[in-house]
Picture 1 (cartoon, rainbow, N blue to C red):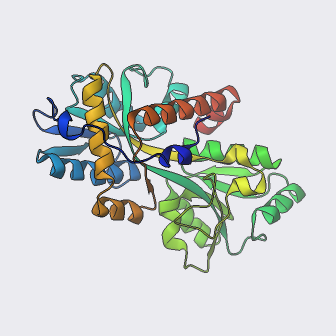
Picture 2 (picture 1 turned 60 degrees about the vertical axis):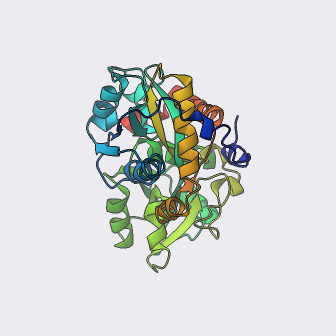
Length: 320
């Protein structure tokens, strides 16, 4: 399997960027976000695409088109002209929908192709300060003493699958409660109504100074640069629950390779801009200036992960 951090360690090279002026873009570029404004998929796309627009001195318009877990906006882009002027910002839900919505009117990887990774993110496991455990070993011991008695909150299919993989790897049984978002679950957790919640690093970071919450683990393979003092699940031997999600720019399939390479190069250059890096840091996500081959490898790896999750029954339970 391709290790994402290893891919990020490759030298930052933009071969022939000056010579690749070519035919893209010939007109304003439209980027669809198939989710509501303000989420990570939206904000990371705006950070990167705003910088691309400034670099190219061309209009780049980001448009939110939410609905049906992203399927409505995604179908529109899948059916658009494959010339690089209509793009879409997506997250792992795009690959998960293949397994949870078999009647999708498009093929997630047949009708669209990944172009650039805007950022990587991790989930964290939060514990209420009132919970009778302070760390992962304490949680596992408490859960084994009272199987199914400890509740844990998830906010979407991805976090639900990671949570299920954690419980299986740890050999414990927890009671999952699905929330509509990380904000709702953290409010209940801080109020003492919930012992555990799986949320994104962006949701967890502002809670670092709160005495009502403990951040007991991150799902990234190693400690997060945003939460360096928090151990990873992998450090407890729970590698099966390790996960880094992604926010990525995709294009319609059959977009010419030279156009894809140009967009990828511009996205990588944008992530070298300090203002873009600052915007991403504020979201508690990590820049990911991967070349096109590495982008494709990362998405292929993630596609295989969700296929395994589907084969093991995790997605059916998480989506239900």
